[in-house]
Amino acid sequence: MIEREQLEMDIVFVGAGPANLAGALHLKKLINEHDKLIESGKKQGEPLGDIEIGVIEKGPRVGAHILSGAVMDPKAIRELMPDFLEQGCPVDSPVTADAAWYLTENKKIKAPITPPPLVNKGKYIVSLSKLCEWLGEKCEEEGINIFPEFPGSEMLYDENDRVVGVRTGDKGLDKEGNPKGNFEPGIDLIAKITILGEGSRGSLTKSLTERLNLNDGKEPQVFSL
Image (cartoon, rainbow, N blue to C red; front, side, top):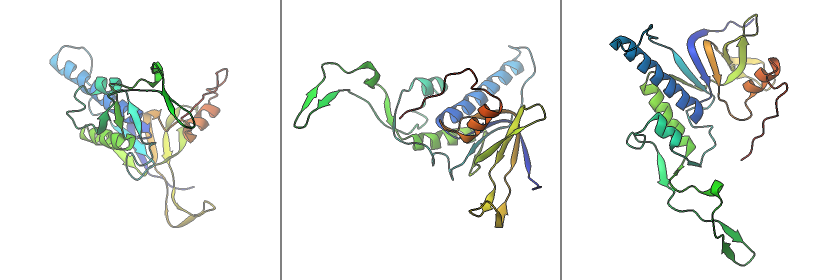
């Protein structure tokens, strides 16, 4: 059996996409606010203290494996960080106008109205890669651990099928999956809470739902671009 290093965390986010990075930031903010209220006597209870939060990412850097190019509704990020523009959020430009055109072989006809789902005025054109990179930097400023090149390979369970963390992928394997001279075993990240945000076709999410029968009696998920 391969000996693996274990790293204990309180909370592990799998995948450094915008949802997980924003979630980690928001969680850290809530923890800090809770502790300040306790210390000031405005709230009863115990301070949470130093909660270890980690975000693992399969890419060599945060943003490297994200589907880039998007129109971003600023509602969510404004709730997370009201001064996101002042803090340097990398927006390319605001959307100032909308139009829908019907194209024929030789000409174009402008629609009298733009369908509501296509109205983006007031939103921002962004590179999701740059946005995630910036959010990752904000996470690190708050003391959140970012682990690039840590692809999650399998979920970890206890004897009662309770999720207890995630194992990262082994490195230095040949095409048949056999260890080479530079083999490095993956690390077992043991966590009280594991949050999966690995994308619409995440392998860990698929294995988890199958093992725990989470999709039984549910409508299948549908994804599109």
